[in-house]
Image (cartoon, rainbow, N blue to C red; front, side, top):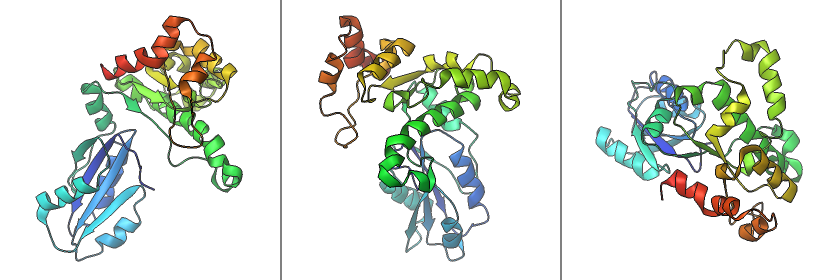
Length: 268
């Protein structure tokens, strides 16, 4: 399922080259952490359409008449949802993390929200895929950024995690312990323990619990937290500012959460 709210879109225009397309798409998946891949099949006459059906995580667009490269890219632009656009030829590949590197160079924050979540059939009943899987997936994504070396390769990259970081902060001690004893992580040679990477993340306030929010603030500080609402979804807050008032925070911390942190990240 394609990303519905991507940070960036990678547009691949293709015509009668199905043997090359899977490699280009695979490299696009590895290019960044919040990417939509738009494949424009420019009226191919071979098995390109069938090959595209086998490629996961793409948005497929087909033209009825050949538009050539420029026209096909324009069609891809119309179909794209990303705030930032990148083009990739079907016979080319993107380097791993290359889109993250470009975002870092622009000094832009990334909001990393789950879409395709863990759980499968067990979380289908009772809306557990939303209630439980979303915060679990948030933590999984953060761990991939840490253990995958993305944050070390891109030291200026700042990532905002929804749901108060999900279960990441609650499990941070277990994650640190795992990094000490598990050979799969030991062989990575991380330059610091996982919990030290928390300073690379910012967090929203959507945790639905006064005590949990107090815990999040105590773990990362108000300077790493921004007010969230998840408006207009039923799992969001109707009155996020009033919920924050219930914490009785010092004026400095409240101002950071309501305004200061976001202003710093967005350079307002």
